[in-house]
Length: 170
Image 1 (cartoon, rainbow, N blue to C red):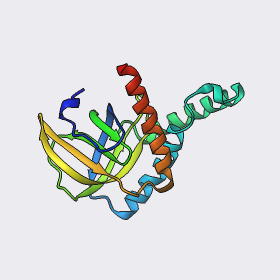
Image 2: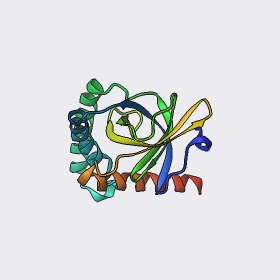
Image 3: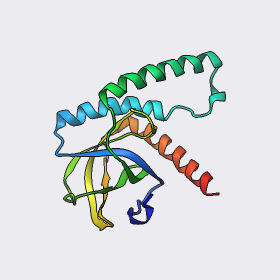
Image 4: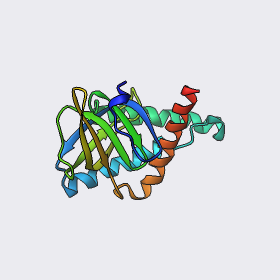
């Protein structure tokens, strides 16, 4: 992964290669629709990772529901985009983009936080930085307050992935 060309974020973050795609110029209706599915995806991502926290019968039921959800999501989101080097933070994201994006412009990024999975998070973003990097551009964008109550689920997921990345380095 090209972590050297990713810009730093001023928050807890982790580096990954995730399928993502950026769609510029999102309107209010597109943002509302994107956030509806994102809240559900974040509740799934943020649930406890430790299986000892749940009873065995509940684990089996959740596995069946996860399979049904995955099959339904594969029909709707076959793949958000190509696996792209990115740095994921608590309120911002940096990724490599093939073309420059205007600072202050907005859009929606679709990313699939688990591979291989069709579980897709769509975040309305405002572009904060755009700098040449390698054969493309390093983009830093933030979603601000758009996630609302789902921000806590996002933060749990980012902290979990951050701790896993530290554990792999040790």
